[in-house]
Image (cartoon, rainbow, N blue to C red):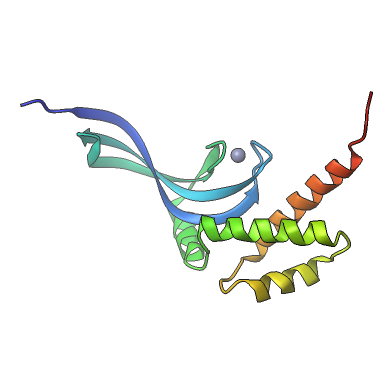
Length: 148
Ligand SMILES: [Zn+2]
């Protein structure tokens, strides 16, 4: 019989942590609590895992940093209230449209509209980072003109 065994380090997305402007790639990105471990796989399915450690990473550029076990527990607690990545994308799109329609919108009005529009809770940090990134992008765009 032919058996495929693999060994190496593997990682898993354990919980969705919301949206941040990534310090590494500079983009508005979804962040995840990641579990990394050494593993042995049988037919590509991990059968033994050891030496687990935890990190928070950008899903766009995969950069991140390691965290302690206690921080991991805090992240897992936070993640319980987090909408899904797909829902958060809807929020990003919605805020983008709102900002385009009325450039002078203040954050409080925008926050209220998001609250009314979606039946899930958007955490304040994600909201602020989304608005910041979209405003920056809009401003950059408005500065663009025929340069030469
Ligand atoms: Zn990144």
